[in-house]
Image (cartoon, rainbow, N blue to C red):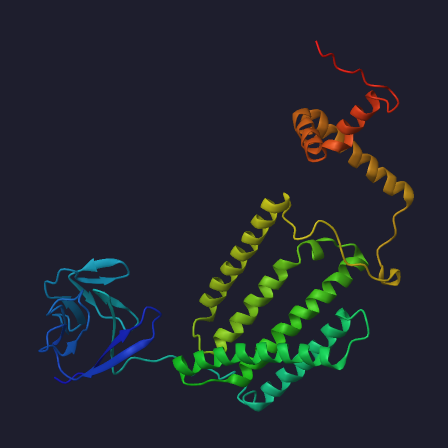
Length: 354
């Protein structure tokens, strides 16, 4: 009886490394060269397993007495009834067995915009870089800048984006055979534009609505924007596990934020990047209501009471701070006291020779 059996060797991510078609049973699997399927895995036996029909005419994969055996779903058995979607592990090798009548999934709709390739995204990215570089230089320029200053800023931005995109294009060419430099350049340009937009827009919104957290925790949104940019770079470079990639990048972004807050807390006993809003805009930008002098004085009084309470609760700390201040400035109090005890006009008594 003739059979068409396909034995597939898979990667840990489920991608097919090699597919072998065999038209007879039984099928032997192992490292020895007299097997039908030869494995290059030192963790498999010379004759590790065999694919055959059992008494119920079911296709099974059976162990031939190997040391590491056959595992499916973290369970080791002497044999398993073959399922088209089941993945069996022999040593470090992952196998999937299918017959010719296996029904494949329906065709997946191609959502890729193939027109968005090559020159069009590259030119769009360069235009974004041009606008972003000129705008950021103009906003940061307090004086009348020269043409060379703007050109130098554009050259640095263009050089960084092109170099960064070139690295990703090389990465994609090596692993997928497609460089897609234009898309990578557009992704990098869009990321830089969003970073600049967030830097200026967050300060403006924070000042307008008195949302201090937008400025005092300004680093964390930048970390997540960079994670999003990396996500699209990996997808363009050929990553086929977007859901897993999202989890990895989100975990890295959260870890980066946690490390940033830890470093800030060690340096200033605060989790925020800045202790106060340092960017001032014209009063016409303000949307939140102004606070009266009475409210300001009430806030100062509550702050004074809080500080006085901490001094009462920790008098030793307050005394240590005073001693430290006197040690750093010895002439501030001690020198003046010595000078006041000895008037300048008082004659000194000569020493006796006896």
